[in-house]
Image 1 (cartoon, rainbow, N blue to C red):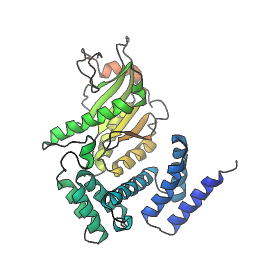
Image 2: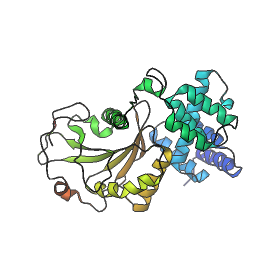
Image 3: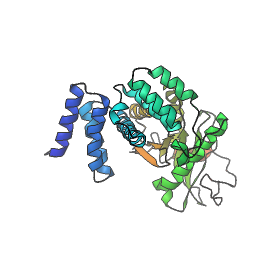
Image 4: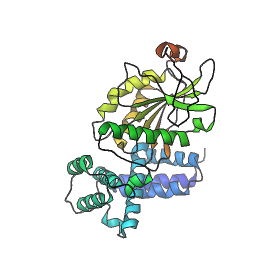
Amino acid sequence: MVKDPSAELLERRLASARSRRRPWFEIAEILAEWLEAAPDGSAASRIRERAAEATELSQGVLRRYVSVLSKLRAIARKEGIDLEDLVSMDFNPSEVAVRIHDRNPAEGLKALQNLKAGAATLASLRERLATVPVDAPGEGVASKGWHYHDSSLTKLRTTHVFMEQALQRHSPLLTDPSMMLRARPPVGFAAGGHGSLEIAKRGALPFEVVAGVELLVYENGPVRAVERDFPAFALLATLYPRFDLVFSPTTDGGFVDAVRALIDAFRTRSIGIMQVTPDGALDTIVEPSGPPTPDRRSAYEKFFPMRRPWKRDPGGDSTGTR
C-alpha cells in the first residue's frame, strides 16, 4: 500500500522533533498545523494516530499538548503580549498554569509569567490551583456557563448539571427525540460522588436501554483514584450496549490517559471516553468499538429491579418513565 506523502512528511517532522528532544510546544505546533488542515473528523483521527506512532506519545498526551498551546495563543492575543513570553519548556506546570487561568485570568497570567521566569514549580502551581479564587461571572470560564459555589457538594452538583446539559445538546444518541437522558439507580459496588446516568428510549415496553453514562470529576488527586473506580465501571459496562465515561472540563489529562490504558488492558471495548469542554461542547476521545464483554445485558433488570415513574430527567424533560 502506498503511503500518503503528506502523512509521511508529518511523521518525519514529528519523529525528528522527538528524536532531537525538541520541547513539547514544537511538537504541538507541528501537529496543530496538520489538524487545522484536516478536512473532517476522520482525517483528524488518522493524523492523531500517525502522530502517536511517530512520537511514541499517547494520543491523550498529544491532545493535551495541542490544547495547552492553543490556550496559550489565546491568552497571548487577549493580553497583547508575545506567545514566547508565556511558553515554558516544561509541559506539566504549563498545563496547570493554564488551568489556573481558566478559573482566574489575572492569577493565571501571573502563574504563567512566574513559570517563564523560573519563579514557580509544578508543586507550587498545583497548590495555587487548589486555592485560587474563581473570578466573577463575566470573565474567564465562568462567562461560558461554568459557575462555582462555595459548597463543594453544590459545586459538584453544578458541575454535573453543566455536563448533563452538554450531553443533552451534543450526544449523537440524543439527537433522536425518542431518546432521553436520566439518572441511573445507585448500586452498592460503585464509588459514590459521580453522576450516574443512562440513555433510554422513552416509554418503551419492554424497557429499552441504549447506553450507560458516568460523569467523572477528578481534580488535584492521584491517578490511582480512577484506577480504583474503573473495575466498577467495567462491571456496569457489561449491562449496557455501550458505556461512556465523561470527564469534566477541569479533570486533568492524566486521568483520561489512565482510563485509556485501562480500556486497552481490560479489553473493555464497549467503553467510550468523552470530555466536556469549558464552553459546554463534547470531545469524543475514545469511541466504543465492540459489544460488552462479558455480555450481561439480559441481566439488566436483576441489577435494577425497582423502576418507579420518572419525574425529572437532566435535560429538563419530565415525560420519561423508569
